[in-house]
Amino acid sequence: MRNVFVDGYNVINSWPGLRDIVGYNLESARQKLIEILQNYAVYKGYKVILVFDAHMKKGSLGNEEVYSGIVVIYTKEGETADSYIEKTVNDIGRTTEVCVVTSDSLEQQTIFQRGAIRASSAEFYFEVKEVENLIKNETERSKTEKRYRLEDRMKKEVWEKLEKIRRNR
Image (cartoon, rainbow, N blue to C red; front, side, top):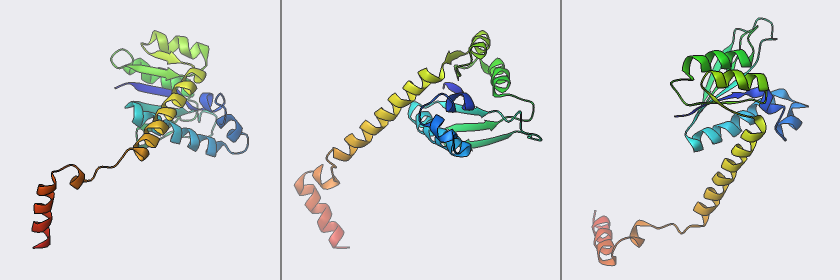
């Protein structure tokens, strides 16, 4: 299974739509990103670790929330998302397939040295949009496909016998 680490604020400030939301409500932008990444993670079968810095938040002890297919990390006071990702990737990067999503070029070089691959926020945006389109197309296709009932899939004589048995109970 691939682990995908996402620098949350880097992505929020890069993606159209999220960038607009952050202007009036940062929490809404975070929640929207979580929803988007949940769909992505479940569809791709990846474990997504979304990391938000709380290093400037006085007294923050850090927090971890688990959703379907995604883990959201809020770092502790004094810890950046970059340092959290670097430390974690250093521990697992050479034994597990890891991708780090950030547009920070220094961070990209560091995680690459630790055994991970990288994707810029823009590259990841297009990958996520592609997955959203696949999900949408599959959903629409399943709505239009003919639904086959059990009686449509068996011989008429068998169906009639089963129906007779059901009625005699």
